[in-house]
Image 1 (cartoon, helix red, strand yellow):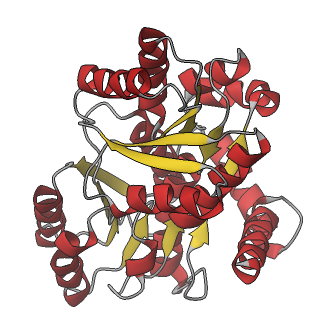
Image 2 (cartoon, rainbow, N blue to C red):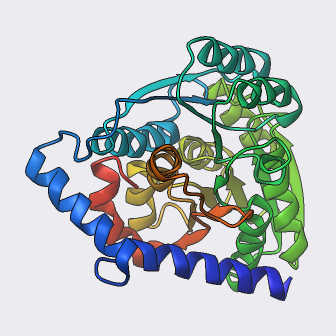
Length: 334
C-alpha cells in the first residue's frame, strides 16, 4: 500500500508539473496554447485536420458530474479543432450500442467509461478492430489496458475510498453508511470497499434507486431512523449529497453527510458546514485530457501514463478549501 500511495503521489506531482507554465517544454506549450486560445476567442489553435471524437458515458439524465466532464472535453475540442460528439446511457447494453454506432460513423477516436466493463468489452474490441483509438475515462481503470485502450484517465476508486476512510478516522467517526446509487457499477463497489479497508469503525452498504431522488431520500431516512448509531453518511455522487441532508433532517439524525464529487451545491454546503467533506476527482480535467490525449495520439503518436492510469484524484475538499473553489464550481469547471 505504501508503494501504491508513493506512485500516486508521483503521478499527481507529474500531472501538476505538466500543467504549470514554464516548468518544462510541455508546460510551456500548454501555456502558449492557452494564450493562443484566448486570443482566438474560442477558435482552434491548431491546423490539424478536423477529426471527430465521440465520448460515450454511463451517465443517467441530469447528472451534473457529467456536465463538468463535457465542459472540459468541449473546451479541449475547440482548441484542438475537434468535432466532439457526446452520448450517454445508464444501461450498459445501450451504452455499448452507442459505442457501436460511433464505430459505424467511423469516428477518429472514442472516449468511453467502463462502469460495467463486462457489457462494454465487445464494443471496445470492435472499435479497436476498426482501428479507432480508445481512451477510457472515469471508470474502468483496472480493465482499460486489457481492453486495448491507450490509457485511462480518472481516479483509482479503491484509493479514493481509502482516503475517505482515513478522513473519517480523523473526524472520530465510528459507523458509516455508504450509499450506492447504481447497482452493478464496479467503481462504486470499489469506493465502499476502500472505505472499509482504512476506516477503524464499521461500514454498511445501502443500495438505493439512484434514478428516483424521493426513493433515495426515503431509503437513507429509514436507515438513519432505524440505526441512531450511524454517525456518517457517504454518498457516491454530488447530486445525492443534498438528498442525504434532507433524509438526515427527516430522521432527526446527527450524522455527518460526506460525498464523492464536487459541484456548485456541494461547494456551498461545504462552506456553510452542511456537509463535512467531499472527494474531488476533477471531472473537468478528465474530459479535457481525454480529448487532448486523443489529439496528441493522432497528431504525434503520443501516449501518456506508461501503461498506468493517469490520475486526476482523489483530493479531499473541506470547509477550508471550499471557498477558494466556489468560483470554479459556479462556472462549471470544478
